[in-house]
Amino acid sequence: MSLEEYKGVFIFAQQVDNELSSIALELLGKAKDLAKDLDEKKVTAVLLGDKVGNLVDTLAEYGADRVIVVDDPELKDYRTEPYTHALASVINEYKPEILLVGATAIGRDLGPRVSSRVHTGLTADCTQLDIGDFPLNVVEGQEQKHQQLLMTRPAFGGNTIATIACPDFRPQMATVRPGVMQKIAPVKGAKAEVVEYNPGFEENACYTKILEIVKAVSEVEDIQEAKILVSGGRGVGSPENFAILEDLAKVLHGTVSCSRAVVDSGWKPKDLQVGQTGKTVRPKVYFAIGISGAIQHVAGMEESDLIIAINKDENAPIFDVADYGVVGDLNKIVPALTKKLEAALAEK
Image 1: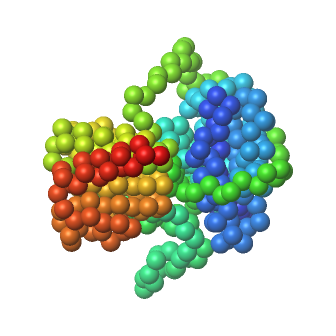
Image 2: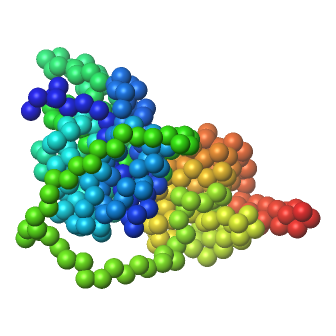
């Protein structure tokens, strides 16, 4: 493999039912940063689907300089084999140095298969991406390579953080957790170079047939979309005590979320978990109630606009990242706060 042949930063622009997934736009924002660090002029989005040309302008507005479109009826709905064939073919044809894929249900299925197909590595569920030297520290007798993609992700159940590189193969591939990277402000009217490419599709034994698509409405709110989150940890004491958090969230028109300890205890479903092994959130206001502030949790919420911590332990690490902190019994503080807010909002 000649590494010099591989140039540019590419992202997989996931779409479902002709609607771009938010992660595609988030990846474009990060791709622009990486391209700048590599002195690359273009960021390329790879758009797969059937009759998806109408999505190109949105990708351009969010940072794509070029969009490679593979448009074919075989790609109407996501199926592993045709999508793998299409994306692997694009890689073999256009040779990107870096390819980013969202760590969604689709991306987690597609990414590993594509990396295997093109004989490269993949780092899954990344929470941070940088350009730098690898190994990070000089090792005697080992060449330190420059301008490598450094892919950081939680490891060992979230108990440590690993930084991984792929110095000897290309492209450098990573799946990235939704909500971790930020979209850039869209540039209205921006246009991208459009490249239409179709590798051709020939059905094989790995093709599946979709007999029926059943869309279920989740009963759990998407905490990544919430503007106000009232998050509880083990310090809440019991699943029943979450009722006082729910009362506060109701007054503020917010959403209840939780820490990993709460999920592990079976008090709340994993869809509500904030943190490295849960979801990364960026609400306008984040209440951390009865949450000690372990690094794994903080990594999932530290980008919130305003963080308010309530904890009886004045030395809890959560106070190091909080904008406002209240030390005391949450069973007294939260109901009193709810009552005060309810009265204040009623006056308006």
